Image (cartoon, rainbow, N blue to C red; front, side, top):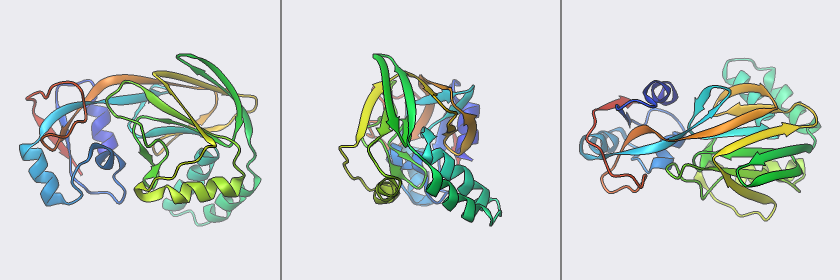
Length: 239
């Protein structure tokens, strides 16, 4: 619901007020919003309006992160399970077992990175999936993606790492390299699965770009989400 309304409001003068209606609520977590409906409603009534960045890939907006590689492949199957396809459990395990590191080329603002990795994330904010902190330093108001390359992991090491950073937890790993860029193009020798937030994008190549400050959001008064001054616009709510 948040993503649907956010896509509708991006680029407009109307601000989005978020009520906690989901199980993870990564956008709310990233913005420092209250986790109860009563507190969130109070924040909407008394808060300020800030501007957050919006990511875009394949003509579609996203707010949390894009991913290429193993993470995208696993979540593709997991989403089918959420839709009632029980056979996807076996397929998810099969995908994890057979996945191999891939040769990837990243085109960033400051140059080209060639690497071999299991997974790459292009993060607008710190969290994705089950509140996995894939980009702990990512900000929603800096006009840049945090591009994280997960290399040197075995499959099981990466799965353990992702489990360790789920639900907002943080864990440093020297095998995660991070770059910052407003535009990212990812290509690979063989096609790799791609996702943005909960949407399947198909396979590489894929291009990402930031739309700086494209979405107005209501945050608690004093919350430093954006360097831009607050604006007195009308708010819409989503839960």
